[in-house]
Image (cartoon, rainbow, N blue to C red; front, side, top):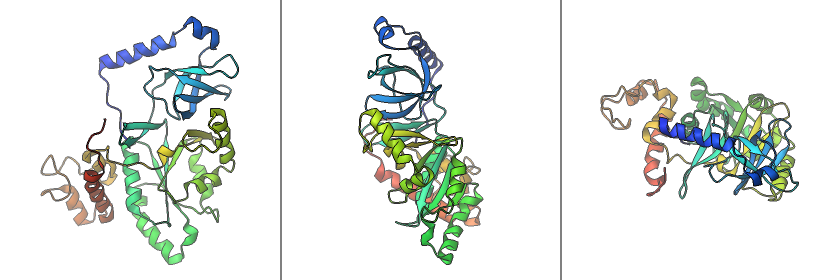
Length: 340
């Protein structure tokens, strides 16, 4: 996940002028085939096309994307013109400013946006295939870097006896103390499912986590008709019900949405520099900038306030160890030639 670079005043003015031109665009050919402009939201993106949901009546429209638009992703708020001819495609004119953008690094295409206007990330971990707080820490860094609030869900807790549950709870206490919401859930017994449902109300959420942690099972518990909803979107896109490559936005019955995309579920951190990774550990922040050396790496540097805090017990050793492992992994995970 990466923050978009700040634009200069000249660049901002140029973007505004380009948007205004597109908003007032009334080409004779388009005017004959396309209806008036509407506000909408992208609920699926596939190739060079997208499905846009009309903000007013929730009708869905297949749309082309203007070549002048840099990117369109699931969750984008757009201005579009639907086709007035049945079976034909409309066109997306403008992508509105994104409040948040979720990105992932790609070895070939650089940093790719994969979802927009997300305001909550559900990090799913589980007892099997292997419980790991280090994996949770990696996702938390990504959430903090994107400035999207995370919620942690520990799945498959029906596999734990009382002593094992106490051990997992003890490991998760650091996160509770830091203020992160932690839920223990079981798709088999239903424990914790209602709590997760309450967390999702009124928000646009994505589920992230490694393969095998039970993300799909959890989504199916929360949205019993999810497969049907996904099938409808896939059918509308013309890709068929078994497609797994298109991103999808699914509405919750009582309010809120889920964005499901293969690119959202797992992603790396090699596009985030060391300084941003350190800020991704929220308990480090009060010490950053106070170390003896300005270029302190917070590992073996003398006069490091963070390592001193670890020694004093003010920062969890387990969390600090995760930080060190992430920093060490960057050297081997970053490609030698990438786009920004």
